[in-house]
Image 1 (cartoon, rainbow, N blue to C red):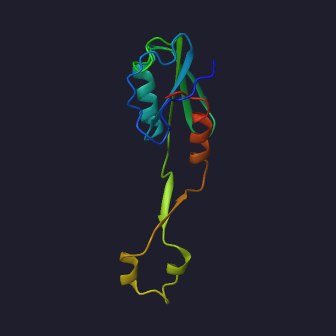
Image 2: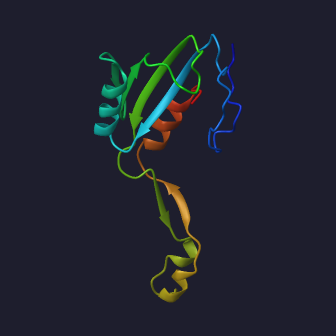
Image 3: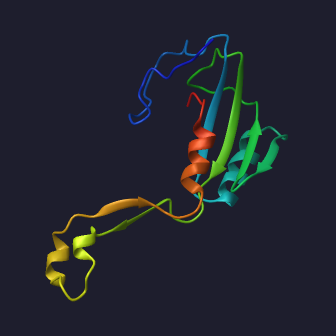
Length: 134
């Protein structure tokens, strides 16, 4: 079956539909602040055995415990990974970049631009989030 989240990913998942995924396999992605925390979360949840793979950042995978938001799923695969360093940076738009042309007082009211940091953290999260239910 093709499970689609009933709530868009940019909104909190506060559903009480305990029939979500009934009889289906679901995937839950957990994202920690850093790799050592991801390892600790996986160790605490996995009941003793997990698979480990590492691309740019480690990913721990295991199939227990059941997930409380979908207790009737036939199987629950957990993926635990992390970010490392900053995912996004902020900067001023190009018109505010010249030290000679901009009064520093203008910067207090200038807009900021959010940019993905160099590296593969954003791509890693996009790749790992593909196809997950929670």
